[in-house]
Length: 105
Length: 105
Image (cartoon, rainbow over all chains, first blue to last red; front, side, top):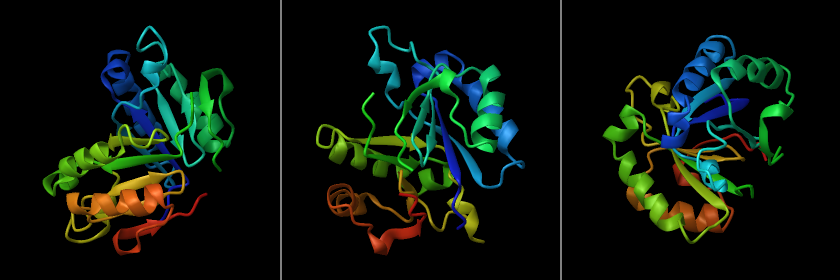
């Protein structure tokens, strides 16, 4: 196989789902598929960021980008274009949506 | 948040599912949860390895470990213990199950 340069996971846990993660996933697919051959978009189960606050779901929907380990929070459909243009195309982390940057590589 | 040292994704696409990926997921959770606080196990949608051969599903079930980007194929419930002991605990790739090692970091 050819490795993906980026693998983007969109959380579809129940709290992310209740806050629109399905349309975030669809928007990523629409903007990535056929345009960036080296990027893969996948749905994932709960990644537990929703449990980090007393009000569960406060940070939902959550998006994780590997291999660097960039965690975005409160990502709405309308934010996807910016993540794709600045992060996927430009290699720049979108600070205003950043929850955590593991900065693995 | 505290970053996970490893994030293990178990594909639950339809071909992986037909070949037992749900029990692979359950086995990973049973062997990781409460034992490795710095490792997260998540289900994921199809990661497309099943499409790399003429006979679709030949490589299913598929497991991906980030941030390094290690792709395992044909992972059965009985293989999980070895992946956990050798890779998660020992930091060693299990060559006999390896599909692709992106070696990102």
